[in-house]
Amino acid sequence: MSFLSANFASLSQVCRLGLASRGGGTLIEADVDCALECGVDFLNWPGSPDYLSRAIAGLGQKRERVKVCVQFEARSAHDAERELDGILRELRTDYVDVLTFYYVEARSEWDEIAGPGGALEFCRRAQELGKVRLLGLTSHQRPLAASIAESRLLDMLMLRYNAAHRGAETEVFPVTQRLGMPVVTYTSLRWGALLNGTPDDPSGFAAPAAPDWYRFALSHPAVTVALMAPMNGAELEEDLTVLRDARPLSTEERERLIEHGKRVCRHAGQFP
Image (cartoon, rainbow, N blue to C red; front, side):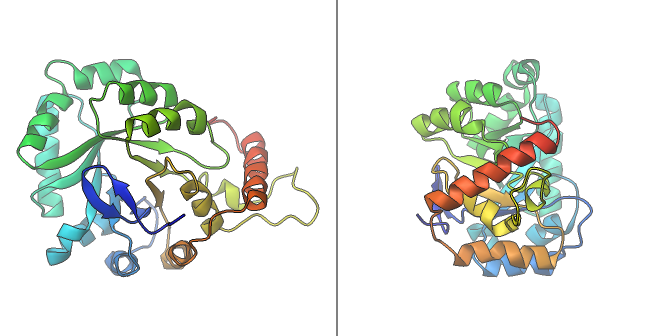
């Protein structure tokens, strides 16, 4: 099993470990350059100006080998046109590789997006013009995401998946694998909870480090890219060690991670 690349729909080969930005961290543009030099070429930007958008805007000739995914909030065609124009200006690019309709959590939201005058209508036109290459959906609602995937109106899904939240294995992945649809996953660390112990841990147990949890996510063949979202350079450097460790998880390793995931799920609150 290789952690270095996977077929990503109509795009070229991509690194299966992607980089996403989040608020509150101390990463800078140079950290993005470091990730790119290590082979990362899938960048997920949430839409607010930050170090990642500045790094993308400054890619220059590197832009063609980097896949840029943007979270897209518009629900109507009118708002979609305005939002996409702003994205292209901010990123100083003529196109984005992936737009995902951001956090679609109810059927009514999808009906608005996909209905007459909805954002999907505009984004399809943008695809025809070459401004967008793939369209996707980001959601916590697994049955909804699977149903939308079945409609074949989209090219990919972005979902939460980790050892504490494994519902996608039965509710979504069988659908996307049958359709040949790429899946990008986030929260491999369950917002850091998987890095910590629980009251139910066996004696002498030490919670695995971040690279093990990325290896867990990437061990599932339905996962095309697993996103890391480090807060600082030290975390990024640790996460990137995954690219140098392409060992598949042994049965024992996987079971150990799953058991800790179950304990975290019991003690770290909701989000099944």
